[in-house]
Length: 309
Image 1: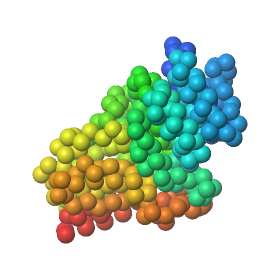
Image 2: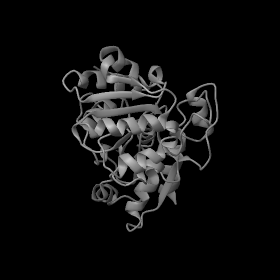
Image 3: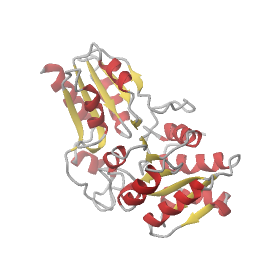
Image 4: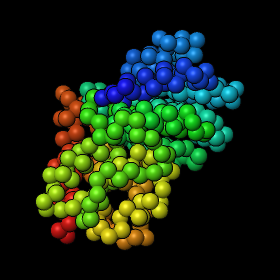
């Protein structure tokens, strides 16, 4: 089944996987109606745990469930999943390499109405700095479905970052998710754009509009960690420069991860992302993205700047 919302794709996939895998349990921190944990609760109430507004406690309970052989998924807004439970995530789950799957819903600026306190611009930086943690940021709802399947199939701690809003898919339904592999979506020979999450679709639009002027390669980076270093290096060979695009602080996110890999390749890099500031409230998602420069036009300008430098 095709979805247009990552949260619904996430909750529905857990329900589907839960039919044949009774190890899967879901924990929510009073946000099941938003994270779509409620879909799992409706089907398997005996495997669903409402933990209240207590993310740290929820994470500790998940650690215990993992040690008893369960595959626990913990759900909350991204800003709370990583921020409020960091000590438990680091000390218990990551050091112990426990099989806990952490979901950060309403990530980036996608909770446009609630402003900086509920938006999350630093979760990729937090989680990718924690040893043993795999960090995923699917491009759309279709890729979310396959990413969740991969999380269940792979033992160890995971963090998955989801958007709150509906938007078009750029990944074909049913395309297998390979952890760690950046995915080439569009061939090009002048500039490479590495994009993640919602920005992947904008990067594709920007590349198509620039076709007559600049040949742009577009790469979907849906695994932020582990990064396949050799694949990233191979993707930039022959190209003049690199642009990264993410709905996250440019400090410590996907762009930083790509730059760490490419620092020995001497490729100029331009970063499209949130410029080390918190989010803000807006009337709609498009408005807050435009305010922070997360647009197709911003990607085009970055590509043109690097091409003509």
